[in-house]
Image (cartoon, rainbow, N blue to C red):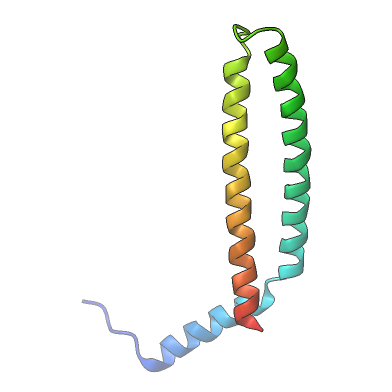
Amino acid sequence: MGESPDDDSIEDRVESIETEMSDIEFDKIEARLDLIETEQEQLRADLDTVFESVRAQGDESPHIDSIQELHTRLSGLEENVSALRRSLEEIVDQRE
């Protein structure tokens, strides 16, 4: 069996994590999230335009399924980014 960690090594590890957390530039993460959300909004608008165009050609269009799949994937990405933003806000709130 390996040695059990002592209080000093645990404290050192906690301090190391605290240092790493303080080095994270949350404003840069938030700016990146803002950019991703803007890109998602533009993509959603473009995808809606293409979807309407294809749908106007008739529901039998071979592209309708792939467009619907892209809608589903985009929705999943939007949910993930939203969850990431909430987590970031919680971390920032805890640090203050």
